Length: 228
Image 1: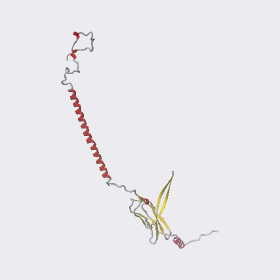
Image 2 (image 1 turned 180 degrees about the vertical axis):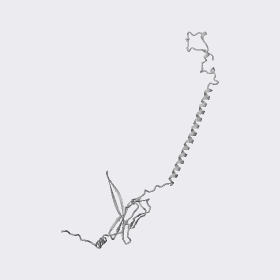
Image 3 (image 1 turned 120 degrees about the vertical axis):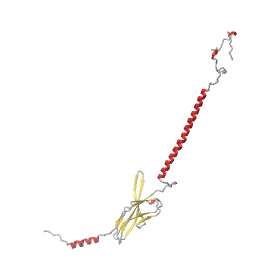
Image 4 (image 1 turned 60 degrees about the vertical axis):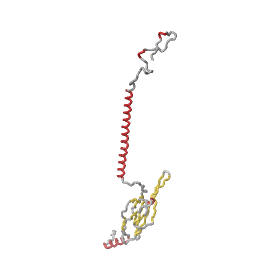
């Protein structure tokens, strides 16, 4: 026996679709793009936005949460976990005044449609608090610093070359003067010297003299007196 399926009219199908759509909750909430990160200096004021679109008749609730990564070291083991801090702020843009270093982390907003009890979270914005700026006595640009360093190098080069060159020429002149004096003294060393008046020189014309004689065999005729 063949069983035939019931035939539904177009009107019945349209009515069924309307009933299904009326049962399924519908809303116009849509999350939009937010900045991925924000960098600020300690003590500055900043604002973290929560961008979304919703229908005018829809009531939404906004909550903010701060996610921080904590690192725990136990010997050689390192574990990382995330701390979640719920912030007491229900505004669309989170205002932070006089930011401190411990307020860095990932900020997420959660938007909830109260009628349908549906909520969406943003991708989050990471707030990075910079280190304290270093105090500079002379706050100049990098190009100016490079020019100053170049000028200092040139001055140091001149201060090393000029005095060194002067000292070298001075030492050279002193050596030349000493050498000329030595040459003039060597040429005039024996000038005007009378060998007969100097007792330290032997008269080569006398011939070789005996160093000693036998007193017993000495004769008066053999005595020769040395000329003064």
